[in-house]
Length: 109
Ligand code: FES
Image (cartoon, rainbow, N blue to C red; front, side, top):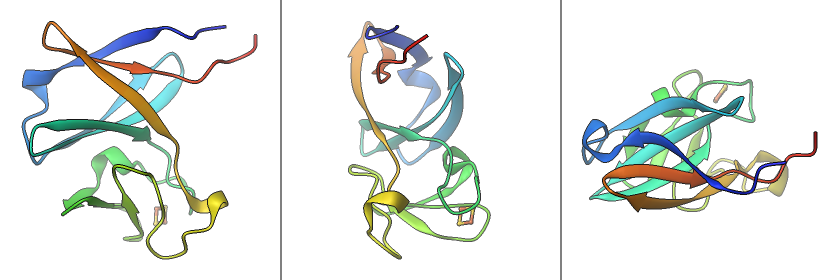
């Protein structure tokens, strides 16, 4: 079981206006930098599994690269259909010594 913050990227590798897909303890994570604020979402689009960290940032939304569904980056809410089953998980983020750390949900082994 893991409930600790884990380091997943350097702040300098994610300039403002960019996003990235990273792997963290078998979880795909999408990272976003909006005006210097870092956000982390589940990388898997709930529509058909597209990698959200490879999408396009449009304001506070990311457009999935596969079929253009949009998700609100700070909350994970699906713009097209904001029902809970279509929202993506948000991970808590902190910056320590220029390193991006996220808090993954506890997983039972
Ligand atoms: S897989 Fe993301 S919109 Fe279809």
